[in-house]
Amino acid sequence: MTDQHAVYTPPAGYPILTPLYDIGVRLSTREKRWRRDLVDLIEPKCNEVLLDIGAGTGSLAPLLATKNPATTYFGIDPDEDAIQIARKKAGRAGIDAEFKHGLFSVATVAKWPAPNIATLCLVLHQVPYEEKLRLLCDINEALKPGGRLFIADYGEQQSRLMRVLFRATIQQLDGVSDTQPNADGALVPLMEQAGFLSITECKRYQTITGLISIYGATKASADE
Image (cartoon, rainbow, N blue to C red):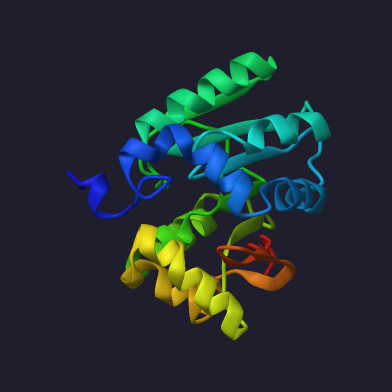
């Protein structure tokens, strides 16, 4: 059995900090801005299924429901404490969202409908290089043909200031070995290696913890 603690870091770096994760992200990443922009880029439709990989404390689900409550939402995360918070958050918001505790793979979401859209928010910088590629490959396999992927995460740190801030904050919490590939610009080549097409850096956000980017990409359609 895979040791899930070997391939992911808790949302705030340490399990004891999970209850403080929402506050920390809100204060340090301009979360309100990039999450709102992410949902606008997704443009959720009534007949679409969205799979939120690394759903964390479930912050995306209420925003998605506000944009289009008829979009079907599924979220999975390996952190049980975070998933419990996500379920409570969805309950308070009165939205229909299903959450699963576990590591994402094609097999672990096989009982859910195949998604049209997949999201990864602040996940890839916290896992080893090989796990970054595995996640992207499994997402490509799980998506319907022509499906879309959106990643909101720390990407290439494109200025000295952003590199310094990233080193002083995120790399102190989450370690250097997992986070450095993101800072060096590895995300786009990894997405290409996983088979994604039309990869675009849609938005950038300078934050006190480094540069956060939103990337969009598509899975090949059935006739490609």
